[in-house]
Amino acid sequence: MASVGPASYCLEVSDAPVVDVDLAKFWADPYPALARMRAEAPICFVPQLGATLLTRRDDIHACEKNVAVFSSDQPGGLMNELMGKNMMRSDGEEHRRERFVYYPAVSPRRVEATWAAQFGQLASAVLDELEAMAGSADLVPEYATALSGEALKAMTGLIQVSSRDLDAWSQAMIDGIANYNGDPDVEQRCLAAVTAIDAAIDERLPALRAEPDHSLLSVMAESGMPMDNVRANIKLTISGGQNEPRDAIAGAVWALLKHPDQLAMARSGEVSWLAVFEEYCRWIAPIGMSPRRIATGHTFGGVTFESEERVFLMFSSANHDEGHFSHPERFDVTRDTSANLTFGAGPHFCAGAAASRRLVGEVALPLLFERLGGSLAVNRSADPVRFGGWAFRGPLNLPVVWH
Image (cartoon, rainbow, N blue to C red; front, side, top):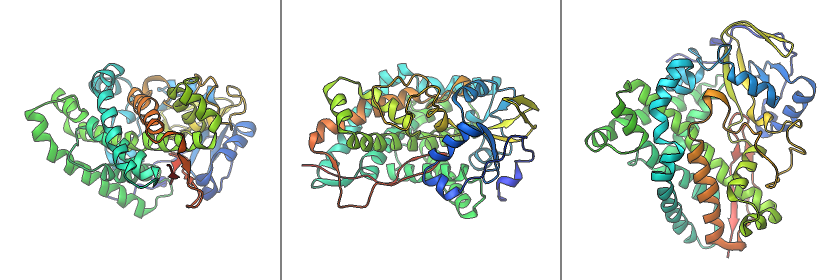
């Protein structure tokens, strides 16, 4: 496959103010730059990303619903080119048709009826292994990655693969679809992951056709959805369904350990673990951006957008909008997070939101602190906790100790 770098599908740009960013600093911590954008140029063109960024919550909320202009259909976009066209990259009837098939497998009702009990069993099994590690571990690979991967195996139907393979494939794909600088090595890793997922689907399909279940692969295949679409939607699920709960689990644990007063409120029941999850995802959005293509020339917020240009809806910035969140830089589990755009808005609201809330907010967090008790702490003698990413963001490590 030829390179699908940024020049191949970003032909026009808006007349928005130009704001330059240092990509390395933006990856290390995008929030200072996003705060300046919100204050000085809330709609701005960033040449280093080849896109116009929307950074204020109400602008994003309005534009995301205007799919006639801010379209998810991106024929030359990185996700389509690398992973195949999925329902996230469709609008209108095409999107509704695929979502109608997909959604029942991950709806709140299905999560409650099928997945919730499995999440609890999987978390207990992962914690059994964690407790055998003599009182110290890195929670990113040993808990967050393992649990999100095991849950994703069950939900996708790819139960024969390892959770670490799923995590590696997810990371390769999210790196690939955020590869706006066109790094060929990143692209090749993404394509290798896509090939591996196709092979895993081929391996698993005969058994699911013989004995259908509630997994996404089974449900979509049984519906008669074309296999290219089935494959693309399984890849979509792996790309977002692994890294988002992984990063939310590890990040929320870190946030609570850094704020023991708020951990105490969660453990006492003064606030719910689900509230912890919602506030963490507002504070440090695991999925910080969603791209759009301008389908037709349009003026919004004093900016004229050109047809076919690329726009980034910066959910991470929306969740720090000072017009909706007082002191947004603070982690505060008692705040009202109802204005957050963690899972988007409009027709592309995340289909897996119920599963994520259940897995992280009602299983992973309470069970970890129940099993390891009040002695869990960041390991000060290990490497410092590091975060990375702007389109997708989470802790890269979380060394902990417990007694």
